[in-house]
Image (tube, rainbow, N blue to C red; front, side):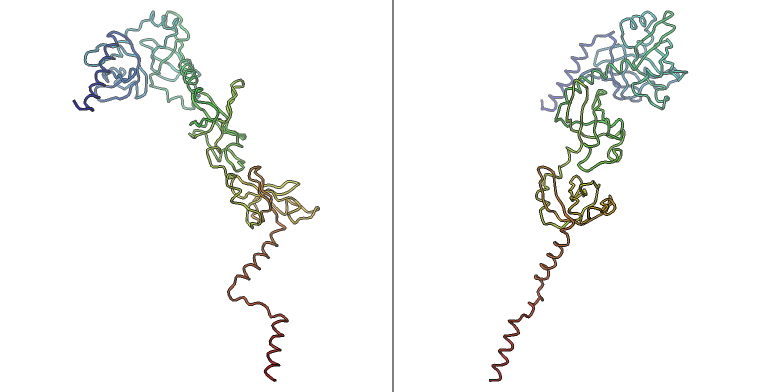
Length: 389
């Protein structure tokens, strides 16, 4: 027997063993993974899949009640040659007494959202009608109530009155339980220094909140979005965006998580010591003006300072008027301390550097000739006198 055949045989044997371990007559829960014309497949744990007739998934009008990804409860009617399920037997067998038992035990029941009513939804649980308040249909409040109509969900019975004729159910309770379980798993991965993927849920003036899994949110502060100054966080991220972030700090006591985005991008200051050297003549953009000087963006994330004494503006001058934000200017690098993230600039030195550059270029010209001085004139006069003698 070849290796692939052995693997196929082993997989079939394992599925057969799992099928035997699930007894006939047992009610199990699974996820619909595929729907064909006559039958559908339901994942029931591990690598096991069970088969159920598509007719079992249709309502009285012949329309499908479930979609791929929905979870259903069904009865195991056969284990010979694989698992065979029946869902309608479960729905039809649920009595008012069994619903009351489920209510007292806190067990979930399966129900179909029939229609929207005042304040919530009408849900069919087996042969009973139940009411689900709009606040209990989901964790996230959605502006489109119709998205739930026709869907089959698991619900928990929160009120059981009049022998089952008055039922109130909640899907949110079960979703919150699942979220707590997911949160416990997510917390294991949310440690300082970890890089994880999250979804932006909201954007504020001071930053963005990112869901990291299981309902856990962290704050991506505006100062941690980019090495460059960010005035509007919504220009960097938007609600619904999936982004990779780095966990900067976890405060378990205050339940606060600080995130960073710029840390996943190369730090522009890493090579600043090599890129910027004293004496260089460069251009940059004015970002802001303070009483002690002018800040200039040399590149995104790297700013330099022109001290007031190096601006060429007198003490009584208006720096903000002379250097409006956004203006492109030339400057000379006078001092670089990349470790301290400080670069000192000068405008008054620009003219000196220009003049020195012009002299250097003139000296390198091939047609440049030295000016005639007194020495050269004396030589010519001496030669002329020798010619006469």
